[in-house]
Amino acid sequence: MAAVRLVSSSGMKNTSSSTFGVDKLPDDMNELNIRDDKEVEATVVDGNGTESGHIIVTTIGGRNGQPKQTISYMAERVVGNGSFGVVFQAKCLESGETFAIKKVLQDKRYKNRELQTMRLLDHPNVVSLKHCFFSTTEKDELYLNLVLEYVPETLHRVIKHYNKMNQRMPLIYVKLYMYQICRALAYIHGSIGVCHRDIKPQNLLVNPHTHQLKLCDFGSAKVLVKGEPNISYICSRYYRAPELIFGATEYTSAIDLWSAGCVLAELLLGQPLFPGDSGVDQLVEIIKILGTPTREEIKCMNPNYTEFKFPQIKAHPWHKIFHKRMPPEAVDLVSRLLQYSPSLRCTALDALIHPFFDELRDPSTRLPNGRFLPPLFNFKTHELKGVPMEIVQKLVPEHARKQCPFLGLRCRRTRVISQRWRSAGQEVDVVAANMCSFEEAKGKEMVQNTARTMTRNRDDTRRALC
Image (cartoon, helix red, strand yellow):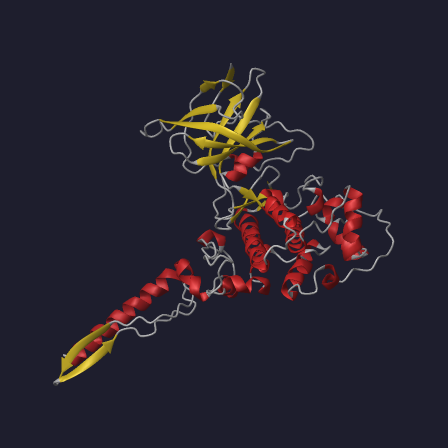
């Protein structure tokens, strides 16, 4: 019998010990709890919980007078594994809903950064954490189990599908997937302050029916603090930013934008742009296309790097890398993301308003099967906090602004409040608000003030006619 001990999501032991090479978790993240955090009681099950047909039983609730609730997960199949642990598909027997459970070996001395990060996230393009529990084995090994929403496909498998069919991915799908990648990055970088550090097609989940994309696997994610060193051996090789290859330890979230540029190029080409066989070979592959970096560019990537000795190679023109019929907007966005100097790469927010995505902002655009696009402009308040109004106006097309009423953006619509009054035997139409247009209204307060003014004007007109 293998004992599985289920504890509350906030039940990790707090310790101040540290180990060289382990990124320290920021103290403020240690204080956070999962939304709708629930207490989980201990239970005992057979096996390690990932075998097909194996059932894991947990108990949640019991706080603040809430009744306890038993939840049973039946393992169905393994969908991914690696050095981190294993991910398996499981079904909740009570609701019939399918989840993905990520099971990782947990060092008892430290809190799990992935769990702490997942607690912060709430976005339509980021996979959501539903529940978590710990399990122990007969060897007294501690495992963290993250119960995540299940999304059936990965972008990696979608790319392989088109390659197998000897086809290029339709450009509308490239735009759709890339836009959602950039939106997820804009959110985690701007709203949460987290760098993912492992952007690649395998970590981008896709619903094949709606084509909604979600970023997953925050096992390498970290809040980057200026002045604090980070490990440079991070991110999968094909998508690794050059500053990481140069050994930089004080890098920024721009490493995610480089990775995103590599993903975009792969979507357009059907294969990785920089398929290096090793760390050094990866740099060679980059130089073959971008050319040899200048001393200034090397300084921008890693000021401490001085041993760079590569032959001088000229940059390969981008338009010769892609098909001659490739839209110039696509090539331009790739070139803006794949810059040696991290500060010169466009941000995720800048990428969202790039002309490459203009087709997605057209209200008449549909999927190839005639269906509507997935939600792309349902921005939340925290997502656009601090974003200049001129950027917001480009981000949210006019036809979608009713989804973001808190912005107070211009909303052209005919709103006629017509009342008929009689005066001196004549009928008079009193139109209280014809072509209501709020130009960059400062939120709800201005809208309310405008409404009150309209009401007063209507009452004044009514009294005058009486």
